[in-house]
Amino acid sequence: MAIIHPFKGWLPKPEKADEVASVPYDVISTEEADEMAKDKPFSFLHVIRPEIDLPEGTAFNDESVYEKGAENLKNLLRSDLYEQDSKSAIYIYQLETDDHTQTGVFTCASVEDYDNDVILKHELTRPDKEDDRTRHILTQEAHAEPVMLTFKDTEDIAFHIQKVTMTSEPFIEHTGDDGVTHKIWKSFSTVDFVKGFSNIENLYIADGHHRCKSASRVAEMLRNKRKTFPGESEFEYFPVVLFPMDQMRILPYNRVLKNVSDETFDKLVEKFGAEKTTSKEPEQKGVINLYYKGDWWEMNLPEAKDDKVASSLDAAILQDQILNPFFNIENPRTDKKINFVGGIRGTKELEKVVDSGKYDLAISMYPTSIQELVDVSDQGELMPPKSTWFEPKLKSGLIIHTF
Image 1 (cartoon, rainbow, N blue to C red):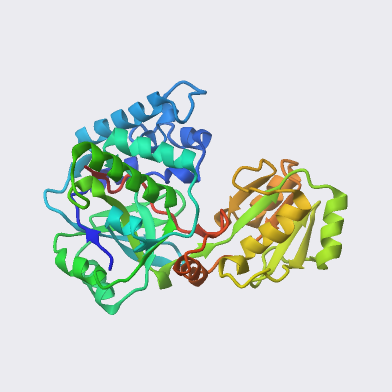
Image 2 (cartoon, rainbow, N blue to C red; image 1 turned 90 degrees about the vertical axis):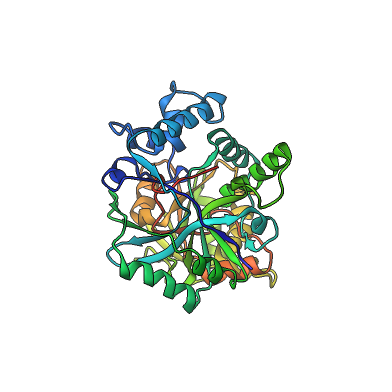
């Protein structure tokens, strides 16, 4: 059963939220972070992307980057921008757009639950990214950004969330440049939430596999160093936002390829019977749309080669039966011939990067469903990289967990 851990969060004063809130570290490059943080000295990007405050060309994993991130965080928390709650709380976090609302519980999850597969994974983590986040956490003595988890909702938890949101005003209400409104409520009555999640069998990672793994590594290192027991110290817990599955929205994660010849593309069209179309997005699972030299094509994917849940994913079939044999892309995590474009950018971005000549072929995908994610996780299988793009994204800097 799932353990949640109320904590004394650091939150910006409501009138300061706009000054500090930022996008997560992993959805932008260093160059994009530098541009977004211009004229914003208190942006949380200075904590999660501290290389922007160092000389150009500084490696992302240089020791000075971690030291600068820790310095920037300490300066923020010592300023008049932030205050720490004097009592442990549960926070309710709501994301709202013109056509979508999702409301979850911002709290801490247990490293033990992650290590013991109460919190289920669906992606591999990369050692270099683990190392990077681990060093940030250790140096800052804080978990600066939350992980997005999902769970099978119950009437009990839904009631307690609604009780908070219907009986009080949000403590923070921040609307970003993208039009997404982020609302946060505080509840110092935490027992009902803890009890409610104790009846949940599994939590599922939606977004933040590397942050989870890094939190686990940090806990093990500090536990051994300080001779403490599992679950005893604050570093044994890491911040998460738990959203009910039926509220989650997944957009496609599209692909763009380099070094695609006419000969290879023609072979692909002939092999799978692709046809020209006016449609830019697949209308159902098992179909992809291709953009090549100014034209859109629709193509049915072949059947999966085995009956594993993960093998039946569109992204898996694409990788195993098209990207590898036709384009010699064996490892999409490292191959320079492929890049990924989040669905929030739309098909216009796909056309743009192909028409510009940066890439030759764009592949528009049908989104993975939340049920597919759950089924893969339950079976202990792994999705191909970049299978899901959750939208809207959480903001960083609105609640910080220190230890």
